[in-house]
Amino acid sequence: GENVEQHPSTLSVQEGDSAVIKCTYSDSASNYFPWYKQELGKGPQLIIDIRSNVGEKKDQRIAVTLNKTAKHFSLHITETQPEDSAVYFCAASIRGTASKLTFGTGTRLQVTL
Amino acid sequence: NAGVTQTPKFRILKIGQSMTLQCAQDMNHNYMYWYRQDPGMGLKLIYYSVGAGITDKGEVPNGYNVSRSTTEDFPLRLELAAPSQTSVYFCASSTGTGDSPLHFGNGTRLTVT
Image (cartoon, rainbow over all chains, first blue to last red; front, side):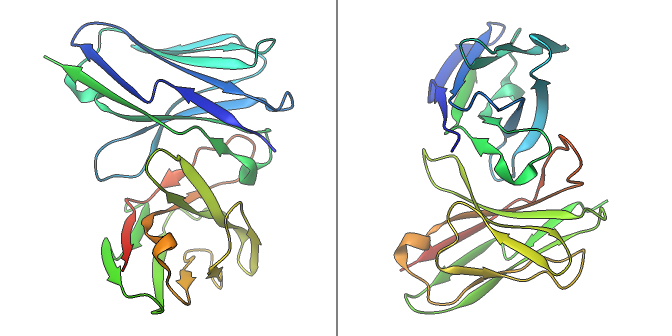
């Protein structure tokens, strides 16, 4: 089955700096890669996703890049703010198979003032 | 809009006791899921359902049971609680079409002692 590895497990950045979280996947058939943000005491929430037919996607201060050849994808957060502090999960699946979403182990991001 | 509602928020069980974790969604989603989240382990799929009357096992189904009698509700049953079931449980729903995002509840923190 699919295996998703996520690094780092914790990340501390100063407000205004950029943060990068990296994930690798094992199944070359995977073609959908969402990112979820989990705030303290809440369930994860989708913040951005990318499909295998594009290499990069941006939404304001967040962006995701995908390298299909190397089987890795990354989340980039620019101009970090205290409200970006949360746990971030990457995931991978084959489109159309909702039950097969495999999550990474999470990255705890702390943005310090 | 309430989204996905989980009850209770916290519960302590003794070994061997049973309980039902409740999950309800008001978005008319066909797909519903149960995940467990353990520290440093990401989210693991326990059971999922693609519609009323249809359920299937996920990655870690042992020790759990589910039913789906209505579109709105998807309860998770623990029959003989064990310490290994200490975890945070998340219910989620989606339209299930293509790459539809998962909508998570806020979780139930269960401790088995």
